[in-house]
Amino acid sequence: MKDTVKYVIQRVLFVFLTTFVILSLTYILLQCIKVTPGGTDMQRWSYWEDQVRLGFYRVLDPSDPDYLERVAKGLFDETVRVNDRNYYYVAEPIMKRYVMWLGNIFRGDWGVSSKLSPGRDAFAILMAGLPYSMRLNIISIFISIPLGLGLGIFAALKKNTWIDSTISVIVMVFISVPSFVLISFLLIAFGGVGGWPLQWQSDAAAAADPALAFKMYVIPVMALCFGSICAFARYTRAELSEVMSSEFLLLARTKGLSRSQSVIRHALRNSMVPIVPMIISEFIGILSGSMVLEQIYGIPGIGGIFVKALNDRDVPVIMVDMAIYTTIGLFATLIIDLSYGVVDPRIRMGARK
Image (cartoon, rainbow, N blue to C red; front, side):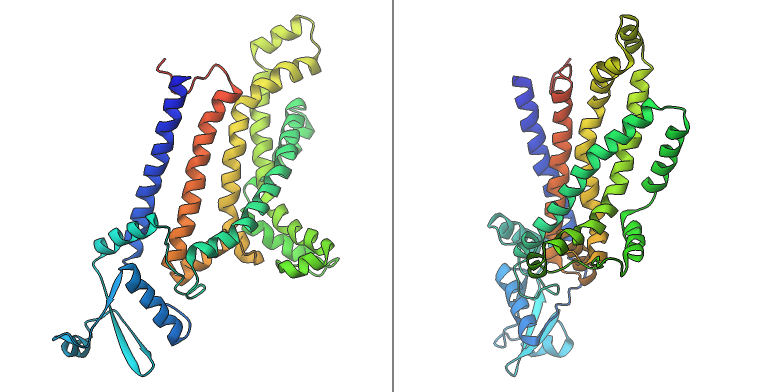
């Protein structure tokens, strides 16, 4: 028990350290890209003033002796004209900006959006989109698990028959097709048929029409589910087929157990050991795969926001999104490692032998 607790603490610390390194490198690299905020002059001025507040930029003061020379030679990074006055902004050195960024993060200040939603708090933008992504991915994984496992078990029990071959072909086809390609085909197939929405509907429209609220989930969930169902089916078939051909299962049959009893009592239990951790990793795969899908279908989730932020070079929003994805991914990896000890008591977390 002591070894397990120590192992968990070490892994959690390692998660935070890895997150810190990834976000630090991402921030420093993004600072090499010129940011062009959008919106009106007043919104742009507000954004640059926020950058000054955070310590990333400074404003050239007209009282400085070299003010006119710097303006004449263009020795500034950005200029905004508001209320008949020109404001000239100069970037601080990258490492100074990095240190200031770290300090702001520890105070919970991620900055404001530069272009995606000018002037709005970057963290608030992502928190507003997180429920949509999590709801979509949780529904998809809960549909994928029973269908994928059931299909894999059925294929393993019918191994080397035409049923097994048919399932294997279907699995290989759909597992090779990305979700954003699949949703494009689904949009074409469902286009104008039965009132299926071809774009994500607003919360007000969904609340007014429960049938519409259900229908708008069908296409994106189907696009996410097919790949996961096929992955579960393929992996379950492989694991169960291997266990069913093992010597201990043959021994169970010779002792009088029927085929169904030996499969349920022994084969399924042993084949689930590597499959249970796969469920968690598949959830992370769905979460990552929904980025482009959300953009295509117009879902206001963090995946679509991330794609838009990358296109707009909106650094504060990108950093918050990176923090969310990195943290979820690393903690999911930790949970996967710990789950091995739960599904297989023979595995001791942190044991030296």
